[in-house]
Image (cartoon, rainbow over all chains, first blue to last red; front, side, top):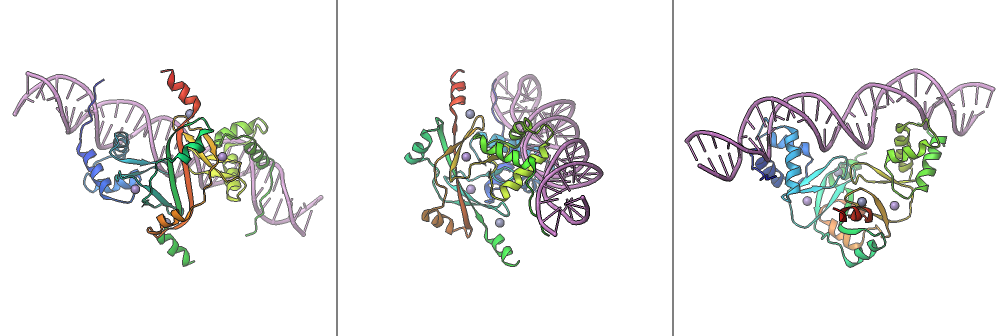
Length: 134
Length: 134
DNA sequence: TTAATAATAGTAATTATTACTAATAATAGT
DNA sequence: ACTATTATTAGTAATAATTACTATTATTAA
Ligand SMILES: [Mn+2]
Ligand SMILES: [Mn+2]
Ligand SMILES: [Zn+2]
Ligand SMILES: [Zn+2]
């Protein structure tokens, strides 16, 4: 039942590239990027490593917003805003910890509160510009 | 280019059943329910109508949390808590409108803020009980 | 009633993700 | 450095949710 994770070249590169880009990429966006350095890597390997890295807390998995998962190499305490038109995600400097008020709101449901996620939704500058032209 | 929506038996039943249940069902949960009244309805019809009803504002589509879409026939201003283990969703009586503080947070990004979604995540009583037994 | 055309049932296609498997390579121990 | 163990990989197949297609049906306005 022993099983120490191994730091493979693939895992290393995936982690490095995710930490470099600040765009909260999907698995296949990251796959395209990583292929520049490891042309023979497979998409399944990218998925598997993102899963492992997220489970070990080395990266964040942004819960299914939009149609695919997105990942974040930046672990500092922050939230996100997503463009309702193109899906682009940017950082927002807000603290996500639940407040006393949140605990009171949840009390009636019988749930044990773990986390409060705030997602801001809007239109990004690029999409706003595009829209103006029509 | 004219196109007035028609109130078909299927659309009627889908809307009625969704409004009755307070469980935020997935498309196929609702499909199973509706089949009791319309045994020949197809899953595609359920999806198509949920899409139309959401677009016209008659129901809410809860943005992809978990692996599938969920729908809500209750339009009153509220938010949700989702069980991280079983996916069950319950209502939370919190106002979702962005505050001045939210607008200030978003200002730096250049986005036009449309909505602030707060999703609470926790463990539901049923799952908590199940967990205690192991 | 009738004509126009949304909407439907049934099925096929798409898409993101996960599972499978034989081959490879990272690590611990010698 | 060599070897044994086994986590990990590439490649591919399978799954699962959703969407698209198409011939037929049924709603609604005239
Ligand atoms: Mn981020
Ligand atoms: Mn609700
Ligand atoms: Zn955009
Ligand atoms: Zn639960």
